[in-house]
Image (cartoon, rainbow, N blue to C red; front, side, top):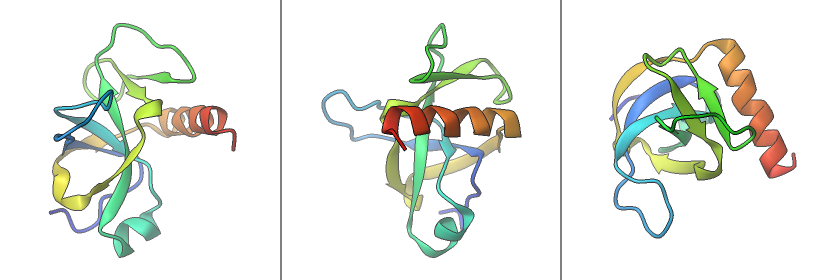
Length: 110
């Protein structure tokens, strides 16, 4: 279990078992919870990534800094225990993290 993942990092996360329409499998996810929460809580808030063929803001935000083109599936935002995090893959560019924040503000009406 990682000690303290950082906001904006991309990790392989075991999302199974999933139910209904929840995204499943082990897949890359972006950590979105604050670094302070990540230190003090046993869970982190993540958004899963997919290799879906196209962007569709605000639900699907395109990302390029994770190796191959991917989209963040914002409506699948969830808290997961740190025990589900397997391996760090990298870190999003600051512009991409801002795009995720903007998309979340829109879909959650914040």
